[in-house]
Length: 379
Image (cartoon, rainbow, N blue to C red):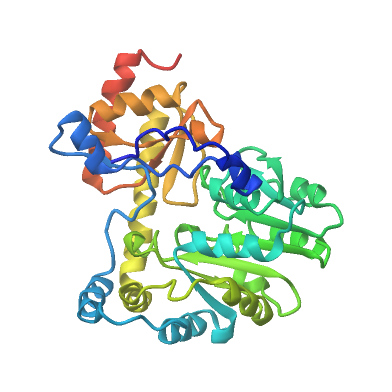
């Protein structure tokens, strides 16, 4: 259940609160299935709003999670030794180059706290994941938005916006909500031209879904003398969203500083166990990526047949220009389908649809056609 409206604040509270918090708006997640069922009295709801893996978690990860439940009375390994060792092997790095987070969102938050002082420029593509701006504002940073070009991150414009530093650049690749990605050649020129006093956070939450021929791998640009943090997550392609586990890859000195900011036991025990098992289940990861490619193609064909513009995606979601995004989003709720209005991203004419199973996509298509008929097509 969503919280009730905030009651009036006690007199004088605003004078006690950190000024950087006063104008923040909280992150709003996708609408939960249970909430819509309560509101509409629906037996079945299809959720295609939060970019979750429709195939679920790796069976090996689920088994490891269940086994870890026998140790719920014990604190987890606060350093995540086994998981960090496995991630280090996966990326041909040392464990000292890996830091764990409560989802990749915590990696983002810790990186902002590390590099941003009041007034520090924080350069972001716009629109992109709102947590970049929320954390930057909370730290007193000066957010600099660089508009997308043709729905993609404009690296040349980002470089121009940085200036001579010091600054922090935060970019998603693939970008959320558009799903576009930049490649190795584009990034090499951009990254090489940045001043040494500019830190970079590359958010690769959806990278497992991207075509390797079209999207770079941030790890390839890690060097001990460059302040680059690459954030990844087990929430998306690995299907462990409920366990909230992400990680960062960075130079050892940067990881050392991040560990000073990291809360004790921020990566819980069952999450570490499930992630370690899921990391070794390459078959499930490959199946997830394959099903996603087929789902994206299906959605592109569906919208294309109706003359609706979409942005080709390298992620596990697709944005479609439907005229009035909020109206279509609300109308689909009446049919038991949850998507995401892109209005909160500054794209009021668009909706974002997560790739689901074939059955879920069929339900979405039927609901959308009903809604589209009610609307009489685009307006």
